[in-house]
Structure formats: structure tokens, C-alpha cells
Length: 108
Image (cartoon, rainbow, N blue to C red; front, side, top):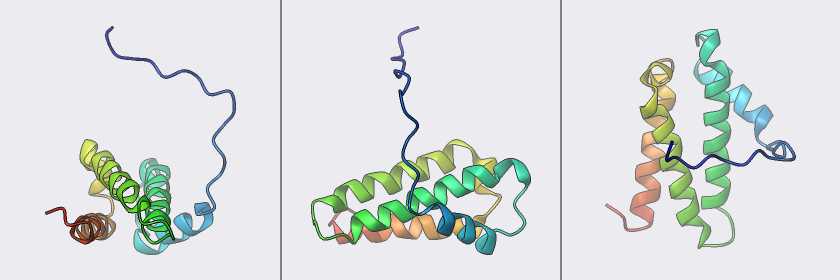
């Protein structure tokens, strides 16, 4: 219909340097995840680790991109509450990270 369709990518995205750590965090923080949600949580963990790298990197301008990335990750969680309820501890941490980033950037 009226929605734009993303063009197919010619190459798969480069693997994240945070993939292994994201899996370990997911296993440590959320050991009882139901199998259908594991991959989504790994993607979210990786996404938030990448936002940390942006926020605490050498270029101050990247902090805005980090805040945007965190808010997008929260949007994914809020878009499927079944995933969010699989690991409430991580959800709480993600919301806190978003609040910390926003406050650091003087965004209430």
C-alpha cells in the first residue's frame, strides 16, 4: 500500500563485535527465557551494548545517536510486551539507561 518498502540488501550486515557478550549477558540476566524469545533478547542486548559504545565514545556528538538507539530498542520492547515480560530485570536496566542518557543530554 502506501508504506515504503526497504530495498533488499546485497550483503548481510557485518557481525557485531558485541555478539558474544550479548549472548552471555542474556544467559546471565535472563536464564529462564522461553526459546522463542532468546534471539530477540540477544539482538536487544547487542543493540544496547552498541549504544553504550556510542555514548561513551570519544565524539560527543554521538551521544545523540546513542540516545536514539536506546529509544528505538525500548520501542521494540514496548511493541511486543511478551518479549519484555520474559526478562523484567533487563527491561528495567534499559529504561534506566535511556533515562541516564536523556538526563546527560539535558532532555527531561
